[in-house]
Image (cartoon, rainbow, N blue to C red; front, side, top):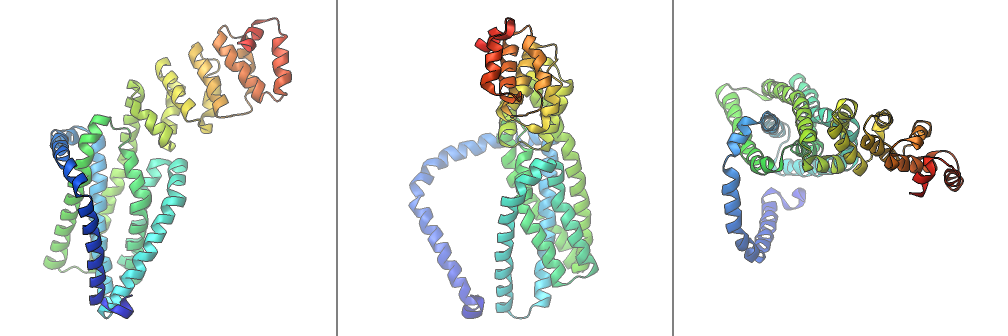
Length: 384
């Protein structure tokens, strides 16, 4: 539209869109007024103690550091990109047309990453890799700017940041709050999302003011500041893995309901690994709780660990291990389950009968008939 209407006339289009937004707000004014008082009370309640929670929680401090450094790097890259456009594209209409095409393509790419890759990366590689994709990608792109400070390299850096920040990186940052207890999250998250965002923007602006207006640095030299911020960002991301694991272990220990939401709705590599550690070396109560979670979210990756629990001394662990293998429809364990047909616990024998009938490699009806004709305790389990 820029080539037909011109940059100045496009501002009128923007005014029309803003007027439409204002009209929608006016239509919703009654609902908004009704919630203002409650919102004000909630904001006051959330602000009380939020800073102390952030100060006392290493997990929250690490999240805040990652977000703050993300904003700082984004601010620096924005300046490099805009400066490159200013230097290499002549004419306001040409610049407007370039920005329109660039951000249209960027939005399509960002949505594609969100739909196609975000869930796959988190499930297969976990939070650690997902947290490092953006800073490592920006490090490569910034190296290009440092070597050849032209519009192409600046556009690639801005494109990398825009495509990943609001898709994979945003989804990953949201997951970081899941192991945080509910009452802590409701107080601390608004502070992290708002105050840290504004603070990061302010710090990035001050760095640019000093670097460009005071020190007279150009596009290439600002890349050095980007690399420094990226180094801190990567260090915070590496620390986040330890913090996330520690928070998961605490939730398993206290059997916090937040962990159920994490496992059932957002199962990822870190969560799977923490559950594996619990199954292999946890106390009976923790193992039982982990098995209960896995019954709600069957995880084939843990089938081998479940098989090792079939001879566990605790009968509830044995029963849940067989039940979970059935829930995840994990075949190939019938020979390991068969000894449990003679287990002292009726509940364990019942689960063993169900598994062998379904995955024993024999027609289920024929298998059940065989069990019912058995004179041992297996028959009682089959009837039960």
